Image 1 (cartoon, rainbow, N blue to C red):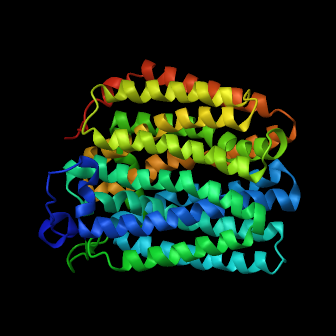
Image 2 (cartoon, rainbow, N blue to C red):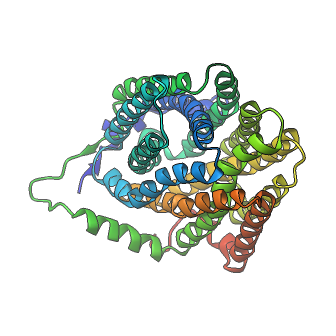
Length: 431
């Protein structure tokens, strides 16, 4: 099997100064700085494409179910190929996977932009676009989670993850509001053009990264099959009760959250709240602002005492907020709730990913990342379809209440299973 480059040949050999804010220290590593810059621009473009895609689907059909199925079309291949993407991240260079993924997505969204600007866009175009993105995302996200520990020292994992997620939240704060305002004036086509251009910038930045590579297997070293590699990752995850429990809990959380947030907010902005696409963009900006604060806090703390209890407690608050959105009388109230939820999500994400990266051996990083991500997206198609169905039945408030109840039930189950104790260490039972 391919192996990670030795430390003296990797960008992680850089020893950034420990002076100054902890949160900024990873940016002193050249390769990480390039990764950060490229992906930040790409994420900004993604905000334009997400708002434009949701609004275009509603314009073409007027149906929450149609929007849900478009998003579901991306979610199905993303889940189906996620384990394969993790296995490839452990076999070949995650840098190469990120580079190719950005190039393919850039060409795809550029093609969609041409179709939209020509005035010939139809619903089936959105399904094809979503399916391609879903397949490519399955390789991109495990590779991104794998490359970070290859570029920075272990002590900088929390701030490195916080910088990446924090930049995503800044773009989530700025991007949707800009996209909503742009779409209100010039429609959706230019938003897709911006996203295509952002992928071109990301490709150029990643091409300059020197780290994130693996040495090829020697001639006498047999290459493990892809299926055997996936099976080995599954066995390793099952043998670690903390990772096994985390996968179950993240699956339940995301089953409850994905559909109501992705489909429900667009419907609320279009049907219940004043402001239309602008209100939709502002609600997502509120979510991004809260998540940014949470990411900054999470990245500024090296370790959180009683991490497992904190994670479940924050999840419980998210469940309460999710249920409350369904009763919000305006986009302003919904935005305030989303901002508070975002703080919890940002804090959890940074600390959880850093915990996982410290706990897992490097040779299995991609597969473990893909398993956790599969737990996050595996039931997303069900969540998106269910949300669209409930909205078309006129049960949006009930949908948000049910989603919050699922999160709270999963939180209670996590405490009952002893997850706080299991997650209060970075070491697996095999260590």
